[in-house]
Length: 442
Image (cartoon, rainbow, N blue to C red; front, side, top):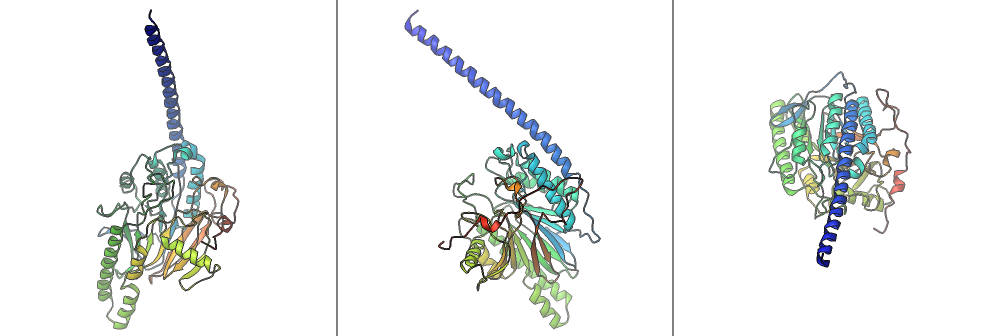
């Protein structure tokens, strides 16, 4: 046989060995994937059962929201109690199963104790990051959380965060929105919103009194995800509220204010009473909820710190601190005019966001109160399941006169007891302020 023939034979042998090795590698990957799928199915089944195990929250005065003219509407002459949760971060995979159970127990304990009329989740219910969760399936976390809230029987509504639909996750915002809007969810008040407005879930929930006057409108915004080519969020380039969302907001403020003008005219004969009602409700009062903080959170915090952590002409401090490192406030990277529009219209007096898990401050900036919600996260930040100062909920009290107040409520209080024989984990109550020392030269 020629040398050429020997060379071809040797090449074929090498080729067969390479194919055999590749086949073994593919087989190993397939087996591991199958094991992961089975393990995820088992762990999610267990956590879904846990989520469904809690009793319904009962109150003496349960409010029933009705879908009127395309908006969910609560009608009441009493205070409305809203609980803000944020960054629940349910991985929905076999790797996150234990921490997912911790998140379920925390939410169940707080909702059961507080008995809110409405729970608003400002983003990141799901956290389908495979090296922490063990899955790409972002609907798993949504389904587990939905099972929990439906079991508790409390009205709830989510807005999207950057992690709810990652570039690599299985389901898009549109597909998740179909799930949240499903008739199978009896207590979820999610509406996908106008398809001509960017994002999904841009909607409003109204609070009316018995005279038909809107005493508060709750605006829910999709603050989107990453931008400028940062598809996986590695460079912290976060998006902003888009211009057509701001136009949508302006349109609704005008629409609701016009409705109030008619309701006030039909309710009051006395001119003095009519003038007082017009002062309170002529421009509809509103609050806004979204995930990624606006730039004003950073401007306000920096101004407060630069003044030795004392109030300024623009800033009035209420409570909390900033525990995030480096940028401290991880807001959208581009300017937008949402805040300026809110100032101009005079409707929105409070904004609630999440995203920065270790920030929990609340302060007034130029007439609008900016509040970070307490986070739930046991999974996303490394070692955060061992820490407790940042974990809890935010309680918002909406008064019949159109005003509101809020307070941060830490999970590790005696009033929040683990339910059904579950155990509340032991954590370190860290000094959040030590996590981020603002650079005085910045």
